[in-house]
Image 1 (tube, helix red, strand yellow):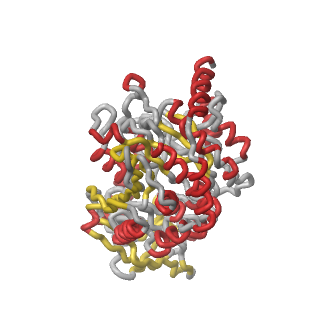
Image 2 (cartoon, rainbow, N blue to C red):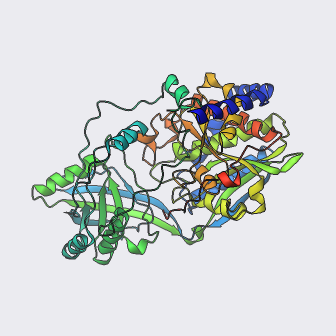
Image 3 (tube, rainbow, N blue to C red):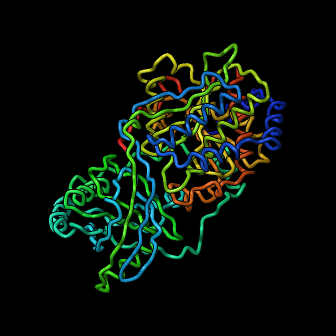
Length: 555
């Protein structure tokens, strides 16, 4: 408690000393609320160029449009910076799927990325195969369970452990002779209970104030970007979920299955369809994810002994040139401290089931708009302000990791630019109001942002907290944290992000709340301007206080 009070006292002193440009903050607020461009930017990134799968022509066209737009706004050094994705691009052109016997029904579904087309229109009988499972896991420690529930918990109860490697190998050997020429339903239909207690879309102000109160010993995490720690060590005797998926795909492809059908396992018609981890259409059968209701209907008809026949027609395209992808970079040049850089960004790539509005065209739109507000005001920053729109985030933060490696290195092996990056601001949680900031660094770093954020309490933002995690997880600010650099992740109201839009077929322009995102852009502009004008860079961890490095996981 004494350490907490001492840190709070230091933070309070720094807040009192921090100079805030209230006049320009007010100017940015007024410009955004009266003459915003943010919804037009969002419209172009989603309706015109979405979806934006890494390596696809859509993504490259979106990147070029964003670069041209920022050039039109007067930004400098605008370019597409290449990095090696190493996999071909992929895009679905068209797809139909229907039950043709014993009933007729158009299925609601999405295609898995980096899986092949069907051989034209194909019709085949469906079968269902159910991989083995292990036992229920041991009961969690009550304290850990309570902490998980407080953070948000999961969507249901505990799931079974995976099978042992021996059990799974036996199942594969018994199953492969059954799938030739069949359309294969993998797994059982999930039972989705009615949710009588839906999560709140807005966080109550009193809870957010407590979360971001630096004097609160029970305060929460400072928004997305802190990481949750290392994953538990897998049992070497058991399969992992990824290994199971890879081996099932290989078995279906080599055994002549006509197609694979997965259950969406979500209620309300929500479908999440991401990518095949191998990025190689030769190692998978054509694969779709079907609405839970439709998967359940087919399962029940099969249980009745019916010959369920499906008709599929899927056209996908591979783009070899997609092995090289691009981050979009644009700058507002600095003046007396031009060699120091304040960055802001979000990931431009998306999944393909919708147009990628909340994840993360709106984050990119916020950042472009924040920089536009500074540029449009005719302001000359002391430090260079650099916008970055990443690709490869959905595949594992690949674009931002490549950029950090190329430009900055790490705290343990720094490049010259490592010492010149003041901060990187990131938004990647949808449409909700900004509620606070998570700042990688000592308490003094977060304290430097609180005075500028206090100007916008009427917009619902209530402060900043430090974090010390170097875990790479979830969003691009953690690529910077991992290198020991001050990544700043902005926390937001959840709205429908986790429940409805994240990676789903409902992630469209219509899910964006214009008032929320306009206010967010004004806050971000003021934050970035504030950091660009300070006499000193944001405080960093001293060398002897820098958290230990954390290995970058293989996604």
